[in-house]
Length: 443
Image (cartoon, rainbow, N blue to C red):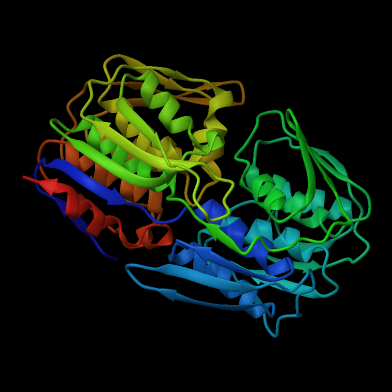
């Protein structure tokens, strides 16, 4: 356990870069592995989650090499043309839910059996939502049962005679959508995924880049198999907006602050946090990068944020999928906004690495926030009365990287000393978070 102490308010100013986008990196690895040719992935992020996917693919016979330095994070992936190798032992995916769910989609169309094991936090996350549609396509799946839910470890028996399905997503989930589409690459007949609420579209963009026959009509994604995936040669991973969100909000709630975050993904399906903060009167400016020679289908650019006087807002359920990972730190921002902020339909936070509704409310209450959960039928809303001066307190990370970083942001803007009990979990997605934060501090 690594504690972290914040002693006083500081003025964050300067330019920073954040790691490559975690969601895009997972998909770039997985799709490169089953395509033909060699793919060079630039600005690849090195953290616990990306290593989980990388190590899993190596165990499945994929050759991966690269350099990881401060100046260059670049890897090369030798595609297997769709055919992977039976692993010699169970594959450990650590606590990466994206690795587990998307890998299940890839393995559904292989001709061997694989056991996937998970870390202590991922073991507690239900997997029915991905197991059910993959079974419908013909994959054999055995999982640990507890009541009506299924949990890791999971044994999947691939089926080279998978059938395409038409599937309506009962819960908005880009991971489940992606698992079905990845399985659909090996299926007979078209695969259709229907979304009630649109989720991040990195998988669709990446599949198009590799030449898949995929079309999107409103919230219908249709994949027709039979077209071999071919490497585009190079992929550039822009900065992760989920990582950038902590610094965006730190600048917005800190007096006299100004932060520029360079080279960040500005994919419209991920810009929910920007849209909501602008509605809250945050002073945010976007500078889109011009297209460069690197083949890339993800828009990106710089985000410039200045100290702001935030106003309250209402976040509707339809907006939640586009900012699901940023909701914890958005709760922090709401504590500094004038008026009552309501974030509706946040139940999905219960089944992340930890129960993030519980972790954030417990911590913010300790700091003096006026925050509560309101239940309306099966829906859970968070209500925050802002403009209350937060005070330092003893805080807990609950072993969750986003809770830990959100509470560091809150502590930076609060009065008095705060102590977060354990920040080692930050390595899951942003190992350099504390050093990046330190580079901005002007006392």
